[in-house]
Length: 252
Image (cartoon, rainbow, N blue to C red; front, side, top):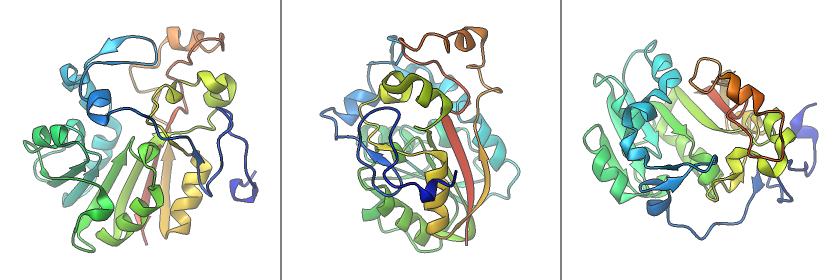
């Protein structure tokens, strides 16, 4: 079915209003600094400090780092760069830039890139400047995602590459587990997109889709344990194929 033909689609994860391209959840009453750059509990109930998992976090971006290895280096901007997990994995022959709302994170990221602290729509980047822009697990946190897409369109060069990764809240796993879909564990996930709605949004804003991928089978999460966990829908869903979608596109 062509997603663009559906009016007010029903969210498998809850009764959330539809806003053209995504379902909107209420804003959480949590601190971004505390939630992401200190001790936090993951969807499986494990207490973790991701700052102590640097190599593992970099490896989570391996599919995009490998993709960029096949392209001539230039100016790259990572939106929502955090402390620099992704940018630290990019070869220094790239002219690396980052932006994040967390000053705590950007202070660390300065080791790897030219960094700004703030919201993308309010940062005065030069038009048609970047060869590649990445936004990895960020758009789902934004209350104003379309403002970001408009700004990306302006600062990305013609035929520049835009790489967007986010959970798919209409994935087979999301539909099967409903409110127990693991990507709902984060209260900061307030803009819930689907693969088809993302494709439509990007095409509506003048991007050409190059490929759509679901990184899973080549990752550490492809295990028998996670496959077996798909049986019991009364518990939090496991990491599974389709939970995350990566869309590679060209600015036309």
